Image (cartoon, rainbow, N blue to C red; front, side, top):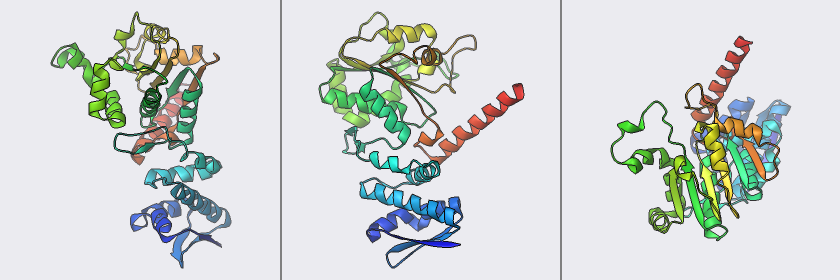
Length: 323
């Protein structure tokens, strides 16, 4: 057994790392089978040498995040553990310095995982970016944040958000109202993200002036989109023809971000996903980049991460049985 001692700068930092009723420190103790307690302003870690070292590395990572102004949550504790286990904890220090934009309520929007950091950097440095991964990885939210930042800095003149109106078991015709009323529920996540970034009034004002457009994918046909930041959400539900049509709308001084989860395709069985095909066809073209998120990049409730892992495990088992 080994005892390690960590001197933390301030009791507030110690209390934050421990969490309410020691909830965060209990996660670390359970992960590494160590005992952790605070005494005289220091944090003591008891356990086997490698486990104690790993637990100390997690605590030091959380301390740096706290000192950099990050809010410590259960998700950040679990991600710090994952980073230490992978040996990538040093890279987490760069996350807090990368503020994309500030929400309407004054909250800074920053990447929370290394996968998200890579995604944000690629959007900045490429014309077209594919963000592919499971639910809860921030694909759409971060893309909208980048679009709002570019709009506010006058790098582009318009924000265009679109997604295919493909139902997950329901039919558009069952919904009341005209066409716009029918498609609005499919575009709601995009509206929500824009409201969060700009506020409802600013969004409404910019939409009325034509600076922001939220529309079904079918409305993109026949257009050339210059000076625009264009986001295609739920792209796994595009057909090959729709994806090609969308990509060829790209105009001068524009960016495109295409997001989707290839494990949630709602197309009929005889149709290929345009996202799956495009990710293969366009992978070696300069100016086009791809990010594939994993369950480690999920920033929602822990159960979302567990659900993603469980489905991946089940899918892999089915593939092995077929072989």
